[in-house]
Image (cartoon, rainbow, N blue to C red):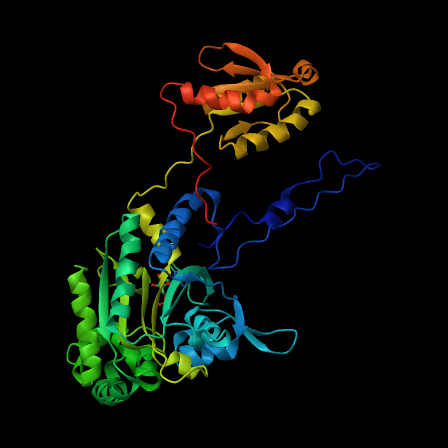
Length: 472
Ligand code: AMP
């Protein structure tokens, strides 16, 4: 989200007179340093948001593992040509959204706008064609598109993608849709699937000739953007958001009527499979997706209550891209299918539905210290407790015992460990029961196991857990 504009520091600076200025010791007014602002369309993902982000990351990783996809991490920067050849020169991404620049070696490079092309490149580069097929890869990371920022649309955003290479069978398309839906289900989100087939490049060619002929008759009614599409990338007229174009689409030829027998058969099988698992889907004849490399099945995941008015509501999308590997110099006719999810949008959907992340286990123990010798022992103890799976809170920065006990009270811990100068000398430590106020002096070497026993005994104390799950 773009940063809110703050009061211009330069203006206020002028108004402030130099205070108590005297002839002898004139105070130089301190220069106000301007804090750099975020670039438009870029955002910080703050600690408060990380709980939901972790929920999404965990759900994705769990499904990836259960469906035996192997993780791949791909570079953020690639040769520009990779995307030009695959995404398509006449697409919005290539025409106006790519962050492209010349690197110090005088090569044209681009921040990746998507990662399917990189995954296909990696599949070829690393000889994955020779492995048993399908090769199933998944990834997660930032993508960059210089689009117009708005709610749910950023210039840097994160996608998680699943790509399956090497198998033609419609079950692959279906299983990808099923696992995508399952990620949303696991998160507690209701989604619907829009699905279409855009056939092979050959049947698409014949269809496009028909579509162009139809829209040429109505050219004068089209907005400027759609006039351009008619000329450069007519398939995109199908997902135009312009009302007139959408009305015209009612009478337009539909791609499903132009599919050859094989494409039809493939698509029908995909639909049968997803019907079998009762995934709610809508046959959307206008769904084409923005990139050139798709063929046959295309699909999108949308919030179940989506009205279809805003393009930036889609939570994810993908399809089959049988020609992509060959396009990049890989083996001819290497089939592939995949999809990508928009993580920011899923996190936002969780927030809209009031779905909160599980709370981090609260520490049940607080460590209070008096002086640097105690702090030194404290550093070791903290680690010993961590290894024993007991979360410990501390206020190493505070000096007074009173302030530390107040902090312990606020956290509502069961036990506070107090290490003063005397205890340091004696090799002991005090365990204070916060409810009764009873204190016990014990051998510092035994404190971890004693605390462990006490916590287990405490009535109503939850079993000791490890630190909260975070992405590995
Ligand atoms: P695409 O590669 O355009 O099909 O995008 C797949 C998914 O990524 C979309 O359905 C969105 O959820 C998400 N996405 C695409 N572009 C953006 C963006 N500019 N900002 C945030 N999320 C995006």
